[in-house]
Amino acid sequence: MIKEILELQQLLLKKSKVSYKRYFYENLEMDRLTGILGARGVGKTTFLLWYLKNSKLPFSKKLYFSADSINIDSIFDLAKEFAKIGGELLIIDEIHKFNGFEIELKKIYDFLDLQVIFSGSSALKIDNSKADLSRRAIIYEVEGMSFKEFLELKYSFNLPSYSLEEILKNHMDIAYELLEKFNLTLDFKEYLEFGYYPFYFDKRVLYKIKLNETINTVIEVDIPSIFNIEYQNIRNLKKLITLVCKAAPYTPNINELLAKMNMGSDYRTLYRYMDYLHKARIIYLLKPKTKGDNIFSKPEKIYLNNTNLYYAYCKEPQIGTVRETFFINMLKVKHQIQASKKGDFVVDEKYIFEIGGKNKDFKQIKDIENSFVVADDIEIGFGNKIPLWLFGFLY
Image (cartoon, rainbow, N blue to C red; front, top):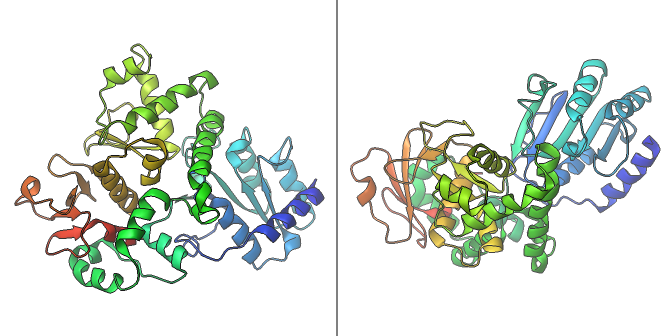
C-alpha cells in the first residue's frame, strides 16, 4: 500500500507548482499533530504539497495521501507500517472523509513517533471530538484570499500588509502609496466577483462553474460526512442559501424561515442547519455581542460567506450586502467582529464601523468614540472616513 501511495505522491508533486505563497505559509508552526482547516478551495492541498516538497526530510521519510483517494481500513495501521520503515512525516489531506479519524489520530499521537499534518473541512468538530484532539493538536484556520493577495497573484509583485491600527491612523498616506501600483476600480470589482478562491487563476472563464461545483460538494458530501444530516434534507441547506440571496443583508425571522423551508416549528434543526453552513464557510452568522457562540441564539444578520458567492448564486447581488461581506471577510481573520446597536459592526469591542457608499455620512455614529465610516467608491479617505478597499490589506 505504501508503495502505491508513494507513486501517487510523486505524480502529484510533478503537477504541483507553487508560484505564490499565501499569507499563512510562513506563519505556521508545526507540532507533532497539526491541523489545517478551511473552506474547500482556499488552497489547503496546495499548501500541504508545498510543505511536503520543501520539508528538509528526505522523501523516503515523508508520505502524503488524501483520505478520499485511497481505500484503507485504518489510518493508524498505515502510519504504523510507515513508521517501521523509518517514516517521520505523515501528511493526510481531506481527513474528514475518513470515518473515525479522531480515534486514528489519537492513536498515532499516543503510540507512534511520527509528525502528522492533516487538513480538513472548516466544519470539523475538533474541540468536541470524542478523542479530544483539541488537547493534542494545534489547529490553524485558513481563509480565502484577501484583496492584497489577489493583487499579488494577479500582477506577480509584493505588497505590504497593515495592522488595523495602522489603517485607522494612517489610511491617507497608505492609500496614496498603494494606488500607484494598480487600477483600483477595475481590480477591486474583479476581486469582489472572482477573487476569493485561488483557483480563479487556474482557468478564469470556468471560475463560476468550478465555484458552484465546489459549494455543491461541500453541501452534498462534506457536511453529511461530518454532521448527522440525512441526504434528503440537503435541499433545505440549498434553500437557505437562496433565501439569504434575496435580502440586503438578511435579517432572519425564524418563524418565517421555518415556514418557507417547510420545517414546521422545528427551530432547533433550523439553527443546526445554519450552524453547519456557517462552519462550512458557506454562510456567515453575525451574532450580537451579548449572544456569544450559542448555536441556538438568533443571529443578528446572515450573509453568504464571501462576496464571490453573491455573484455566483444571487441574480442581482445587493451592493450594500457585498460591501459588508467584504468588510467582515477581511476583519474576521485577525479580529473579533460583532453586530452593533449603533453603526453596523463593533470590532474587538472597541471600534465602531458604519459601511456604505461614497456619500455615507456620520449621522448614525455621530459623537461615538472610536467610530469610523468605511466608504466604497472612494480612493482616498479623510479623517475618520476610510476607503473600503483598504481593509483588503490586513493580511
